[in-house]
Image (cartoon, rainbow, N blue to C red; front, side, top):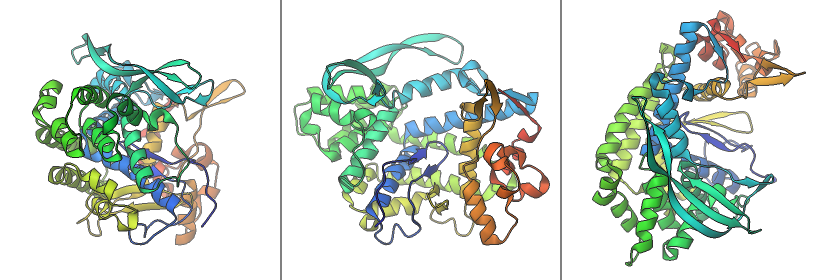
Length: 458
């Protein structure tokens, strides 16, 4: 048993199908034998996010939006051969960037809540309401609709705060509840926002529904809508008025039933999920514009297809995961991993792991591709590639895969590209010469999208 550490980098990157875990041991056998409980708890938490990503309507909506943003960036770069970063997807109507980016922001809601640089601690509720917001439409009009679910509360110092509940709070609450249910106290206690938002609202509005199974069912149902926060408000207000016994089955029956369907002005959940899954599979396929990544495209397509089949077969499968216990004995989680795989996991030992999708055979994905794509997005759409040096901005970015590449070169007895220059620490896109492209994952993706011919400005 190694020394436990506080949470460090542990993340799942939605729409990129990859996670980054602070786990210093190999995880290839995690499903078959017991491991350190901290490693298992971290993997479980982030894998729940993967399942949310590929088996829910809100996950599909995020995937579609992110893929379109990357397509827009590639179009801009190849057309104009220059870009000023960071790109702002709300600055244009191309690919419906403005309405899609706005809707994604509203759907996600708030994430962490801090006050005077400290995590806010929830003390008592004040109000729970739906707020109007101006939402842009494809034809350029704006329409004010009640779409934001807002919780007003007091913290432990009686300071009043507001928190907009969306996909971030609901998905994190769900993953945290499952993690703590199966591995109680193994990881440090998480802050109330976003990890205890659902629990605190349900405790206030319908205390008899505050069991882990019911809370997870509520989260799962809400994520099956494009605006999970709005679905959460509607479901909680119904629960507040409901007088009968509350069970997970009731939550799924009502949440997937005709009344919620009519309220949300959508198709029956199975039809809606099937339609958007087909759209997402076509959209994700646009990521892959070079035959080198065809096997990666095929496997992620198989994963999305299996995710739809799995959800239609077992709508409440996540409850089985909650009940299944620790990973090595949790048949429901093991079956989910077997059906839907896990595209890429980067660990503290600088290894990249990949759990293949059932039926893929030897034609498996390149897990480093997902990590490179995530970095490609961060370079273009965030400020992470902009460094201020002596008052001037420079375009520079350390590659996340540097240490993994170094280990790979040594293992294959190849020349160590990471030690030949500072490109891996400052500008991985410079590895685009024919010889270097055979070795550099990020450079290969950068060049495939044509950015070796694009001038980047800050």
